[in-house]
Each structure stands twice: as structure tokens, then as C-alpha cells.
Amino acid sequence: MAAFFELRQYRIKDGKRDRWVRFMEERVIPFQVARGMVVTGSWCDPEQPDHYIWMRRFESEEERQALYKAVYEDPVWVGEFKPIIDEMLDRPKIVVTRLEATPKSVMR
Image (cartoon, rainbow, N blue to C red; front, side):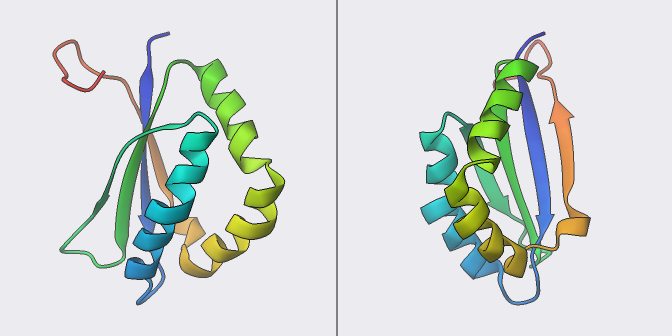
């Protein structure tokens, strides 16, 4: 299977988006990148103040599974990151979409 992307759409609890963006950019994304994740971008929706979107790229399903384990089973993630995330993120509203690039896509 070819490389694929994971588009992640989150809803942030009221009034916490600026704090969320700082936390993602200063802590979460560097933590994940240090463990091998490829984060291709992150965005805020100017028309929906609770909407945050980010995207990651994986070479294969096997790589995705290994990276999930490396990140989400790490004691720092479980003990430090998860409690902070839980206070800002509306988890039931998470939408994750798996995307495969079309032949002429500039992101591959």
C-alpha cells in the first residue's frame, strides 16, 4: 500500500482554542515528531472558533501502528499530555479521515 494521510478534525472546548494551538505547536507536535510522526500541517477555521484541523503522513499501515504505539503508550503521553488534552478537547466530536493522494496531488 502507498503512503497515506490522516486528516484529524477536532472541536475544542469553549474559549480554549488559543491555548490548544499553543499546546499543539509547542508540545504535542514536537513530541510526536521526535518519535517519528510526520505532521504535514495544522490549521484553525476562522469561521468556527472551536474547529482545529491537522494532518499526518504515514508510509504504511505498519508504520502508523508502530508510531501510534510509540506516541500514545509513552508514559509521558499518558501521564502528562492526556490530562491536559482531556480538559481542552471535545473527544466525542473527533473526526479522523484517512486520505490517499491522487496521481497529480502535490502532497504525496
